[in-house]
Image 1: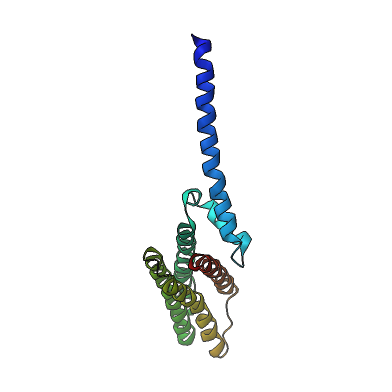
Image 2: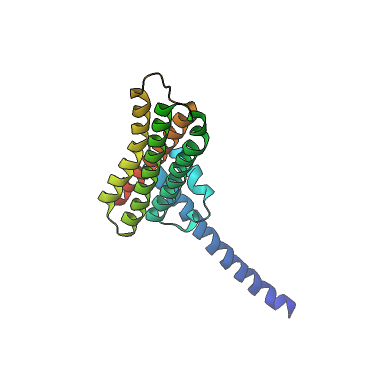
Length: 181
């Protein structure tokens, strides 16, 4: 009797494993295919593969996941500027105002990305694209505020965070291009 169930068990195991392998492979392919439409392929693939929702996500879901990375980045930068630099500018009113304005710009970038999620849900890809471009541009405004303030330098860490958010938004824009096809 044990020998009779053994082939059935093996057949069942084979069916389960093959369906599991088939379901994982197309999703990995979806991530890679989607990321090829972006300017930052390696960033796109590594970010999406780090999120446990990605293996079951379609292209729109992958865009939403990347928007989430952007929201986290923008929010973290707004908080970083507000918490780490404002105390250092206690006696410098110009620097304090510039830092507050920059923190506000990153908060607005996060808000724009939140709107992008709603646009994706509504399949309003033109609006999603517009909100991503706005989110991508707010850090530029921060840099320009520093540039206009005499005697201030643009902090290296804020510059690094700006580049990171710009690249994330670039990935989202590339995915949106794919969705709009």
